[in-house]
Length: 425
Ligand SMILES: Nc1ncnc2c1ncn2[C@@H]1O[C@H](COP(=O)(O)OP(=O)(O)O)[C@@H](O)[C@H]1O
Ligand SMILES: [Mg+2]
Image (tube, rainbow, N blue to C red; front, side, top):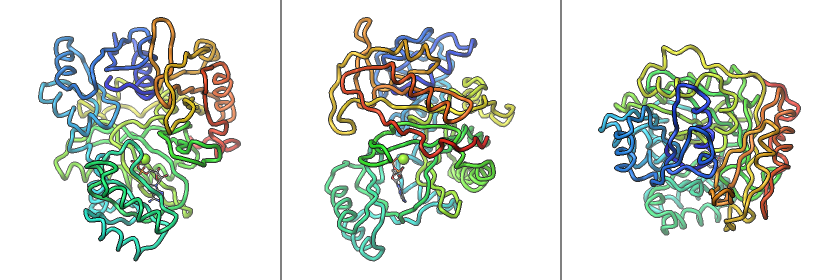
């Protein structure tokens, strides 16, 4: 397991729940994966491809799962495949669907996948001229990976122009040397992640997350402050359309480019007021924290799905099984996040939280002897299950109330959109 976030902790936990898995090695892992049984951390960097390959070969590792986008964009899959190591995660060419928003737009255009109208610029003045013609609101995006900080949803022209100037001024290095200027979409956002072996698509339960730091979805954007699944915004009918209008055409377009895509294809969607799904972006890996909400509901062994993707036989598996009910994940952050925040605070109450039946996923933690300490902006993700959204959300907050560390911050309104709604799937 390559990565060190809450997503990787959730993936590792799901994998070791299968008796077929003897051990999960996390590279580098975190305080949570360090304390899981049959799981241990290996102190290598996620971009140490040589070290990871050597370890996998010497130890006869059955499957390498890559969590984050950066090593995928840097070609970890290509490197490992060349050495005949089985990998879950797309090649560098496939990862372009996330690592270049301009490339993804071109692919969507060619495949007639519904998305915001957009144009790509590699010159600041041309981008600004275009913005002045189009008017605000308008969306300005760095082409490359920017750790979730490359997008400005500009309400006014001066904001949009300032965003273009910041990108070409080098704020994001090479990621900002091209910008995508995009039509502003309204509606509700939702995420549909799918397993794929490049031929077959098997969607996971649809999820929604809360990006803004503040309650009522206000304030600065973060990596995600909470998530829940299965969101009723994606009805079974809409899920059918998302498969035929978005996911399948994307896989066919990748195949036409001779890209052998194996892993997760994640569609970030806007469901427009008319009820049509449009792509906001694609990601080439599991989402964080959506994964922490979706995986606890998965009943099919995760390694069966991952191996079937890696070995190009996903179409031969029976349908994915899910348990009934809903799941909610609440993120506990360090005070100050997403700005500067402190580290090193001792965390208490995790065992009590787990004793309520909740999962406590470590996002930014470290083990210091017996003590778990905060070591990141997003520190923990607490997920609970219930037969309804109300129950899942109440169970999650009940577990959260057990946990303490200095300056702990979390939103108290996770899932407000779905409270009181039925479950669609
Ligand atoms: N065309 C758009 N219209 C309205 N909001 C958008 C649009 N594109 C992006 N956003 C908002 O900005 C957020 C980040 O954009 P996204 O393309 O997902 O980039 P990234 O996740 O790489 O930062 C989205 O989740 C959405 O809230
Ligand atoms: Mg996004």
